[in-house]
Image 1 (cartoon, rainbow, N blue to C red):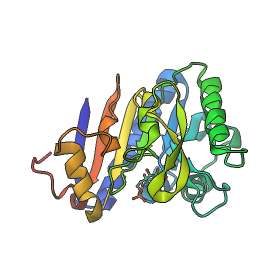
Image 2: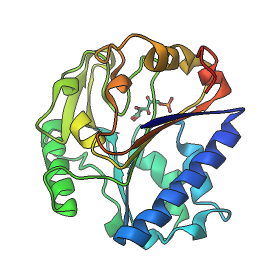
Image 3: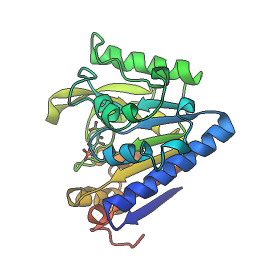
Image 4: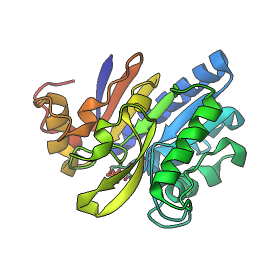
Length: 245
Ligand code: 6PG
């Protein structure tokens, strides 16, 4: 099942997303004793991370029962300005009381991207104790080209069905990114896309109302097998949608 929620502005989008984050977290902890989350990278989620770690929301979550993973990462040192971990550290991790053992960064100092991806798959399977982990929540963004996590158009990781993670060479960036792949993403209980900005409108239009073409718009292949997908869009990113959601 999927929901599309359009908000007047980015502030309202983040308030709603923070409420969702806390509600999912409270329910996961109540039902299963823990809240497992895969965080999105890029710049859009910064505001959400700052909000859930603010005085207004921070105390709604028992952060020592929260376990944070990263849906994708760049193969750079964790203190590098391009690192998704670094962005999350600045906007979330340094603002909450959480044990370092609850945080699972990719090993971006591994001998290769492939080794880093293989190691992270083992980390996931060891933590969840199952070959196909089921996250309570996976947060994702969208690029202007329709990519999500580091699943970029026409890249090999789009076709990965037997692993949880991939080292994905992205020709247009001339770099290899580390990423979750569809089987892991689509096994989540809840998936939430956070999308803001005028420049994302064409991709949002194509993904949500366009022809099915997931090689070109990888986000189209994100759909939970047994869970819920929610799009958090601001008016600017939703402006080309025909239907009023
Ligand atoms: C990354 C993200 C990527 C991001 C989109 C949107 O590592 O960059 O995982 O998928 O979510 O590129 O990025 P912005 O939020 O910066 O627009």
